[in-house]
Image (cartoon, rainbow, N blue to C red; front, top):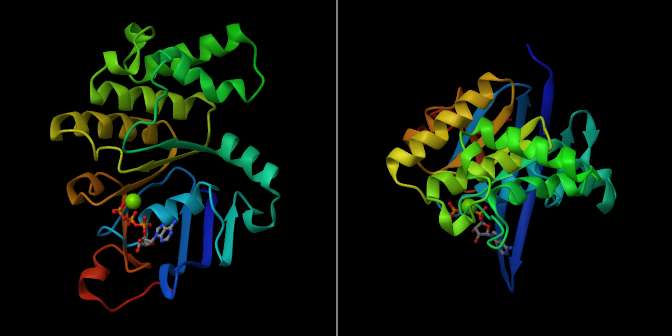
Length: 236
Ligand SMILES: Nc1ncnc2c1ncn2[C@@H]1O[C@H](COP(=O)(O)OP(=O)(O)OP(=O)(O)O)[C@@H](O)[C@H]1O
Ligand SMILES: [Mg+2]
């Protein structure tokens, strides 16, 4: 079995809105091994993005533990968390989140600037990443000069630029039509074959089925595979 890369132990996240308390994550246990392609499905409001924020070191659990490559994330300082986030995680979002006045190449270069690499090296890496997603010829295009699928591929190239071991994708096909969504999934599948660990969040079962393993989250609780539909076995 490959190395364990992610472990969530009894992770709880609660939001308070006035008197109203939402248990967005209710004692989540999850282990992900290096090289896995895992999808997390669940209805709207079930806690998927909350989980993604914690996995991506954008937020901390209220309770429980997150261990990333053997390090306890809860115990890191803010600046240490930012470093881990930059080095370990590549993010892919539903709405691409590209900077509109930067071209494709400059968007892909962005995460490398924080690494302190020189301009020439940045350019070479960013070009190689654009090539990996089939967009070498589009380096000078601004986001609004690209189709939705192409914009998402730029976002994937940006996620790859820092060679993070983990790619986290939150509804990467959510803003795309079916055919374009399939192209994006083809790329994610290829990246997984190349060794990237991928965690994909989606409410689309057809998209989810392309992962090697599927878990489901309902009302903040995580279930293996189809269990949620039978409503019994909460993973412990
Ligand atoms: N910052 C916040 N403040 C208060 N409540 C929040 C906050 N973020 C999320 N929630 C609540 O936590 C629950 C889980 O939200 P989350 O965004 O994780 O759901 P989701 O599964 O990603 O949904 P969707 O499929 O619609 O994106 C919801 O009830 C939501 O209203
Ligand atoms: Mg969400």
